[in-house]
Image 1 (cartoon, helix red, strand yellow):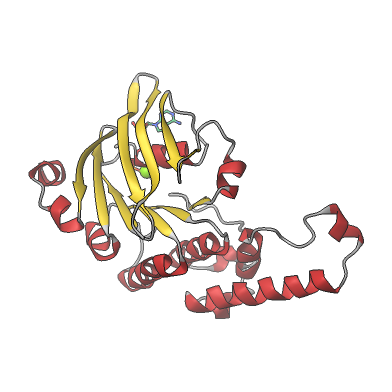
Image 2: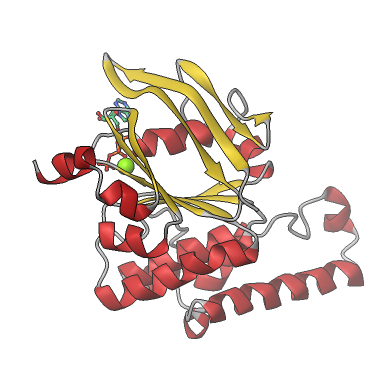
Length: 252
Ligand SMILES: Nc1ncnc2c1ncn2[C@@H]1O[C@H](COP(=O)(O)OP(=O)(O)OP(=O)(O)O)[C@@H](O)[C@H]1O
Ligand SMILES: [Mg+2]
């Protein structure tokens, strides 16, 4: 499956006269990892903020399977199937590793008032299922033995890994990852990249912001290079890396 899953049409956003996004258009295909690269201040995170409803753009539209996302509050966009990680990690530090993952699961038992008063067997069974699924995700990521540790006792790299596990725990179809391997030791980078590479087989599509070009080359099916809020280049990782405009921006 590789038709357009998410489309950006002419998205613009100014902050006090600075064009963070300038008529940005592009698309992410289903079942793929799309890399979003570009220098500091290119507008990459702003694009994620627009998609997830954190920032309202001045112009343009974003479509998920043809459905307009802009103008909806973040929680509704999340329910439509868009999850994200943040450049600055936003785990719940007072909770355990496992509890962070449990919180990310949709349709939590006990959410409805009915469940508060009538906690019968079906609810606790569902709780067990979620618990098992959470442990299994932590196991796949190599974090199972840390399940009961407080989230803030993990190393920085392990916390980044945990934020990916939390993304997987949601049933979101599109995962927006903002610099998942920035500032991480090489061994942990490999673990994180292999988790990301597995996302499409879990039925998830990914848009990945990353400065580490080596990582981008390893995991992305396609890459968009942006600068000053605009799309400058697009193609396979090799095509984009060899584009003179991209080389110029990275070296010159
Ligand atoms: N909330 C805001 N208020 C004012 N200016 C902002 C805001 N958010 C972003 N900007 C500006 O918009 C531009 C794009 O920022 P953005 O964070 O999207 O870049 P980026 O590509 O993610 O950069 P980096 O690689 O450094 O994370 C920058 O000039 C930034 O200073
Ligand atoms: Mg950013």
